[in-house]
Image (cartoon, rainbow, N blue to C red; front, side, top):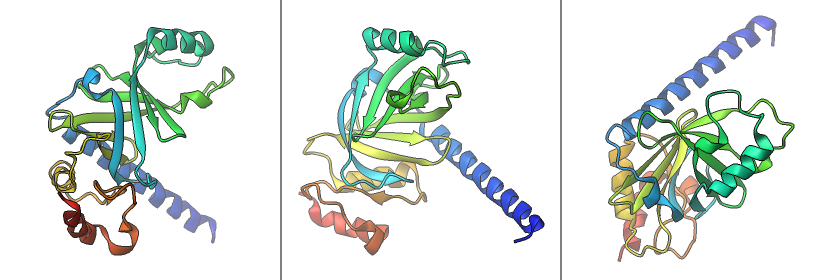
Length: 219
């Protein structure tokens, strides 16, 4: 491949990334246009039922905790020289543990309820790290905090969660939320209520067919 072709390919890839980023931000702005959110009410354990983007693990569990003053002081003492923008460790509000490997520390954006800047995998940082990139996230609760959507606003990905061990969580409600909140966005079930933790084979049968299958598992 000659240099001109490589240059054209680079431009096309860059345009695709810009378009995807703009679309992700539009989805987050749309979701948080009418906020229904209170940080105190989303603390606890959640089960991921529907995902967009790169999250593929079945029936992933997410734990949301408030950032305690002790934790803030610990991070400030260890990483006080990392941040070069207006955010400091003391601004952090929530810690989100996704499965066993990923962690987000959410900093209130200060403009729209439910909008955050997030530090990804802070537990892997060392005091020697200097160039830290913050990601943009949006969080919104639905049906009186029975469901929660967490979206990455930079590169469209995220998931819809239900309260852990809430027996009233249903596939029909999840499908309805997906269609109402992000219509037309391609995603897939990663877990269906009442299937005992088995992951549906959405990558094989297709998501539209899976929606019909989900109805069979309603009480």
